[in-house]
Image (cartoon, rainbow, N blue to C red; front, side):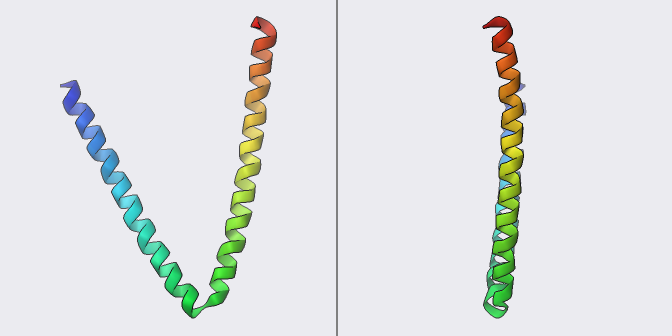
Length: 79
């Protein structure tokens, strides 16, 4: 019974990935066509992308800093 449950989970995961790639592909094609007709869209996309990646990097750095602080406290106690 465990194997059947595992196979259903794998099927669900693959199905989710399939939909993700399909929707992503359609959106990227539409953005590409839009950038051909309206080049300003391309500039906006790059600007939003850079801001998003920058904020995401800062968020990840803060999370890693907090994680390292917890590890340092742990190793100070038991190290």
